[in-house]
Image (cartoon, rainbow, N blue to C red; front, side, top):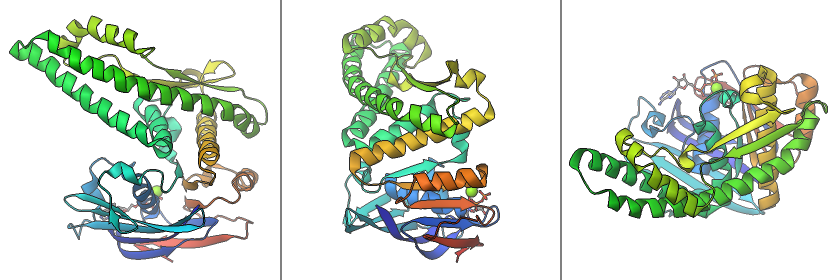
Length: 355
Ligand SMILES: Nc1ncnc2c1ncn2[C@@H]1O[C@H](COP(=O)(O)OP(=O)(O)OP(=O)(O)O)[C@@H](O)[C@H]1O
Ligand SMILES: [Mg+2]
């Protein structure tokens, strides 16, 4: 699949802009702070319904035109054209082929993307939330019911947490917790099944991918860690933890604490990994994601490479782009990349203009 064009209005530093993309390689180059990543963000938000850079989406609206921001993308998938429009103002509106969606999640899976974000390089040194996010973004694009379960789990968790505080401060009865706990266990079970399924899929892909990247020097393993084993055990755990949860005012156990670990040659990446190993591991995860989406949808997802090619030397760049042939790639970089590939379009990004 590929995106044919993108129209931006009042989106970050763009006032009005239309960008016609190549089916294959698109390079956006220019100095810092010119609007390269903003283009990646626009594609991302139109594809997944929300930004990866901010949860305060008002920030996206151009600072001098603070009423609304708009992104419109025309794409081609299975030889059919489609159009997604996203408008941000006091509300967020998304329409697919000019029909407004009722739920934001309806947009998921229309345009499949894989993002290489330079900030992801350190996710195995940080807390687990960004690692869960990697899984969540991948699964959400492929399994609509995953998003439903995830949203319902979060809502129910919030309700249980609120009720924990009411027990503490208003002496409400503990018994009521049972309702939230059995609901939580139901959603957690579904989420856990999907997460296990997808970590297994990654594991099946990642070993060979990583061997190739590291010239056969490294064996990689990915592990999924969860408090959840089965519904009955989880309900018991929640019940057992009630007292401590009431004191703390939040739920200490659950799939909101799930984590991923990577081992390279049997050593945990987060503890023993070098900078290069962190970088190549995240690359291997992303390339596995690409393969998984390809297997599941019979289409190549769109690759968004923000400031990523500069990390690779000439040979690695060429190998990398060889590997992702027939895929639309959007690359940002500060220097004009010298690529031998024929099918490419180069845009110079400067002060709100992509030429
Ligand atoms: N809401 C907004 N309104 C106007 N300008 C904005 C808004 N949000 C961000 N910007 C501007 O966008 C620019 C940053 O754009 P972007 O992150 O795309 O830069 P970049 O070209 O990727 O730079 P780098 O090479 O440093 O990554 C900055 O100049 C910033 O001030
Ligand atoms: Mg940038």
